[in-house]
Amino acid sequence: MGYRIVVVGATGNVGREMLNILEERQFPIDEIEVLASRNSLGTECSFGDKTLKTKDLDTFDFTGWDMALFAVGSDATKQYAPIAAAAGCVVIDNSSLYRYDPDVPLIVPECNPEAIMGYSKKNIIANPNCSTAQMVVALKPLHDRATIKRVVVSTYQSVSGSGKAAIEELWNQTKGKYVPGQEVAAKVYPKDIAFNVIPHIDVFMEDGTTKEEWKMVAETKKIVDTKIKVTATCVRVPVFVGHSEAINIEFEDFLDEDEARDILREAPGIMVIDKREDGGYMTPAECVGEYATYISRIRQDSTIDNGINLWCVSDNLRKGAALNAVQIAELLGRKVLKKG
Image (cartoon, rainbow, N blue to C red; front, top):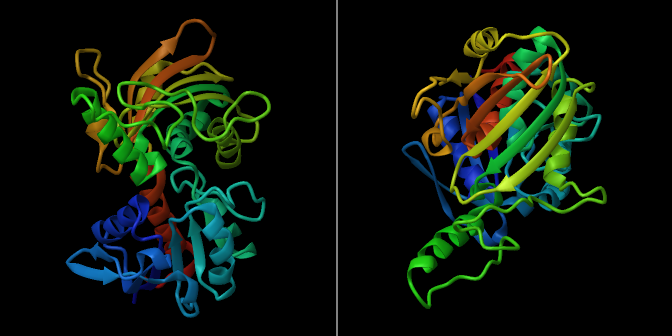
């Protein structure tokens, strides 16, 4: 016996990835519906060898459905997620709306699966920010061994994190650099993204950080440990898919780089590719379409007593969004609903 699943926002990048991953992982489904706004009504979505047509989110009845995977913005989520939850359908939300709600669990299954039981307060589970998701997969097993005091992270985030329009802007600007008269002005971003990097993701806050940077701080504390200090600099780079992070970790206890490497090799959701030679590391282009979070460049930080540096890359549309949501659905099925 399988589940009745709804994918909300099925025509977007993350929604389509959710459908792909549900099929790839053979999630036990008895029935599935794909929903979108009226502007996308009737759009066809692929699900394995089937073609599904989107239905109207505004009029859909969630009664009798087991789970709804939401891949829409916070405004639409605010309107429709409570309706689905009140109808008895568990919402797994990819927006930022509920991440900081104390009555909504924020889940990365490799890190805090036990928190899933908190879903019943609102019938909603939150999916973390893409940059946080891959980082905490790496932090958690190291924290369990040596207790993390402080994290300094610089992110190099692909344009797919901003949606289809950003992907098109990078593509068109790149072409425009080579064709006189075909230049494309920046619309999605405040400056050109092609052949450039932009140290600005989301809005600026009063203290000079951006909201993306604040998200990494708040979400790491909620998922891993409230005592961990985190400082982040988040940068948009001209890469289509795949986020990268340079992470510096300071521990309470000494952790040798070889032991850290061994711990990460055994940790769930992680692949270690770490050879000290040309090409002996992972890049974002190589992680596209993969489930794993890849860790490379593991090395001691000699400037502090208990420090480790590492390089972390992952497909942001997968582990950073769609895959983590499906993993939450799998966890919910195993721990709570127990149909599949």
